[in-house]
Amino acid sequence: MTTNPTKDRLLILCYLTFLQNLLQAKRDFRYCEILLTLLEKEDLIAVILWIGEGELPEDLTDVETMDKEELLDFIGGDFIVVPYLIEYWKSKTDYPVTPEKVHHILTRLQLQNHYLREKNIPDWDPYDYSNYNTLCEKAGIPKTVYGIFDNDVSEEDKYITAPLHGFFHHEHQAQTLLNDREDKESYKILML
Image (tube, rainbow, N blue to C red; front, side, top):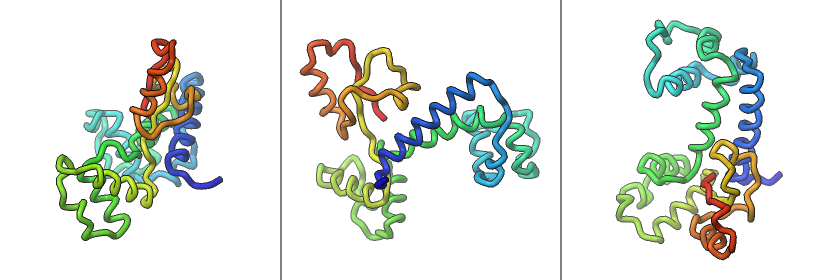
């Protein structure tokens, strides 16, 4: 397989969504033992903060003294970790452009003196966005893509449902194709 960060992200999201559906059907609150090896304590604390929408739950005494196994027990197992991972991978795109993402990409590419580091994003022109997109590609950052789906496809199912005409790098491309369809009311554009 050739490496394409956008396709890789969509593939990961597809299988994570399948796994989430299976775990929800089973309501199994155990966790896979390999998580103790793969996830750091900071990762598990991030999951707990995600569950609490940025706040540590009141019944959690002291996360600093808890080991990884205790944190996983508190989280509730794979049933909870998988939705967190889905949210994490959904956020791994070039959209939206933020100063933090620009800084991260330029640092990753060791371009400390690049002009985009200092230029305000509201002042960017098409040339700046083109440069940014090229830098994202070099840094291996997946791109946001768009697909045309049946109206009954939900946000949760968009990663496990094939779009009508493949993927588009720009929403206006998908919109143009959709506008040409006689039955356009039966479809919608979703961002992936």
